[in-house]
Length: 367
Image (cartoon, rainbow, N blue to C red; front, side, top):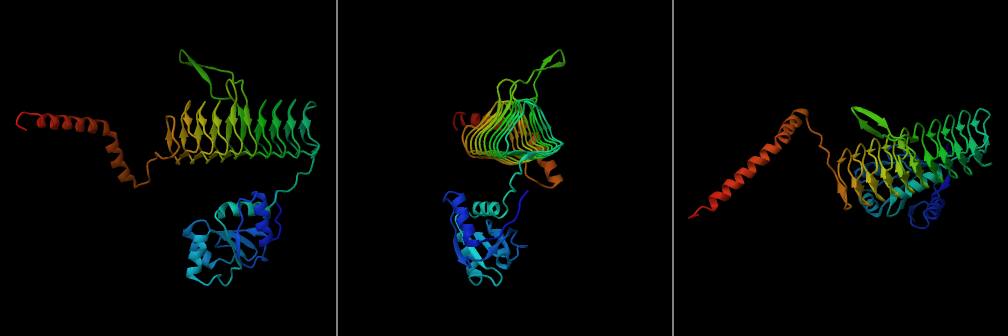
């Protein structure tokens, strides 16, 4: 739902500065009048495309790129200019700034603005009589809005999406086709919930009794702040007692599982296939790598980074970068390493015994 526009590099730079409230301002080298209408990778860009260089590994691609402009930092600019003329034959301009990736992200938004929501309720939508739909909101065919739900100004509910009873969808939120937000949940302003996501399903709560399991009613909800993005097929369970809370600015990738009563701090990003067990509190500004598995009833300090495929069985009390996965190796080598790991307890005991024997010899008279 985007429509490309054509913008000069000078105007694009001004728009990025405005959108970032002055935090990002590039220095233009070359033609500031070049017209840009799209974004592309360095190797495939054409004269009308903006590309970016944020990793020195791709400097060779930048030297031969046909992009109309490249956004990069000063170190990469100096490296390119030391290897060629100030601008390559096909390259028109450079936009030099301290954070080129962020500058590029804002520029890409400007070049590909979201289509405006066309207000209205489609004939094939199922809207309860007591639901409240703002006049500027859009509800597509096949969507279901249950009793007492509220849809905010400029919000979009895609085809086949389900909004449960008494659930509130904030202003300018976008609920993509076939996403589900169940009863009593609250979604903040400008949130994006992608297709297949399920928000507010029952948490996994069962009490054991004589080899059987008794279901515990999950009577809480899910509360999501503003500017949160929820990836496709991600699931966020409602709280058992109290709510599961996702704070402002959190970004969740596809296929993330967040269990009941978790709290995810503001502006934390979580990559695909992460699983988070119940009642865990993840701090603000954390980064969780793909397929990390985080145990329940623990805390992760603000600003922590958890590497991909890392198991987290206990609380992280100090911010830092934590990694605990087993690195890739040939299968036969892995088998030998696994055999050593299996014997570590025995080896530890033998080392301690040898240390004790050595100390006993040192303490003998005459030594």
